[in-house]
Length: 426
Length: 180
Image 1 (cartoon, chains in turn orange, green):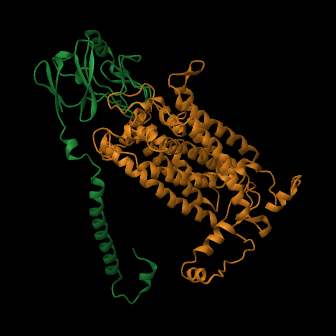
Image 2 (cartoon, each protein chain N blue to C red):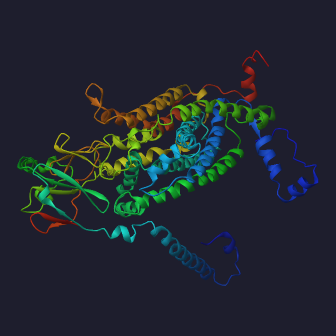
């Protein structure tokens, strides 16, 4: 991209100069974190990248200290988490920040993903950036799942049983894989041990992929709300102080609900059943995953019929496909226009997709036999939502690019910014 | 394997031989790496202490007709149900074409012990424990995703693909059964 006028980092201190000649890390930091030319029209939806980076740090820091008190052994794990909440100095808060932090992390990542879907941030030349993002999201799901198992309550145990069982749907090698994952014929102590190990490992892998994600971001530069590439230096402002301050402000605002959850309602997003220690001989009467997995859980559950292959494998294929399809979005969307703002028909389909996603989230939490429309149950109507979920990617996005007439695009970021009247106060 | 750079060496006496050496070296390398990685994966498989708990005996005399108990075998719950004659008759009256995973009731019990239904208590969908004597078919209902089984433990409705699994077992006497 065309660069903003920047000054090169030239250390005046002889020690700093000596060091910079050998490892030019300060110059690198200056060009990527301070001078980095950023489109000047980014709105608050763009602050969620920084919020996510902040959340990753929060989760790693709280997680490392929790691991100092946690015992990954089936007969002790449950009590050790209770001891963290009751006995460890400040443990109640650290544990609450970590567990509600997972929810806040997923809330932020959903905003970030849906922002990308609306503003076409996945389109060329940002396909690799997008794919790295989907990989991070998959790693986050795995990490959250492993973490959810560690308190070894009833919900933890049965989440582990159900999710590992998904792999048993694979023909022929399914059962050996299941035993390999669990380390036994059922979920037990070996399962807990390895999940703890992986829960500790994956965040660092996420951090590494985040580095690649940011690297891939810095090659073409940020997308922006109008989706028109930066053309000249006056389309951009330096990252610092403009976006460091904006991101910092957004993080502070984000911390308000986060703090409310952590201080006042640490268990509100969790399930009472998880306060019962894991019992392999009894499944809780109504098991549901954490809210952030509900849409995918609803998709898994909606497939309750055989079609060529049996319902279990079919459900798992849809479940996996609903996430893996994100990898192909850059090529499924045929529209040359990035931003949804200039796509009159896309806006409606996108809006329906968001509503449909929230609906799937709601379906995921309900009993399949619950009647929602006349005699139609959740099991029936959720199938409709599954159809639209996939149709959005496989039908709407490919066809809309051919038939939709987009509104005229501004010539540049500066032109679009200057069209709006200046704010009253400067 | 033939890359541009090694094709460019037209003075190489026999390029085919060189390609063969590349492929052979890579193949040996893959086998070596595979051999090193396998123990690191295999350590995750069930260990000796888990495998040692392979068979158990259970005394059936405590289970009244119409009652069922859940026992633990290899860390997995197992249903032992003493079925009533009504339940057996119901199961045997079902036509095969109504079944998702067709299997006669006779094939799911031991001859002469038709009242004893012994099954792994895990829903064949995703492994939750179904709740007994519930659902539309008077058998089992899985709380997780709503799969329903009949009085023979056969899948009738919902996402589960198969009937509840019968573990290997044998009757040592009329009241003693060995599972595993």
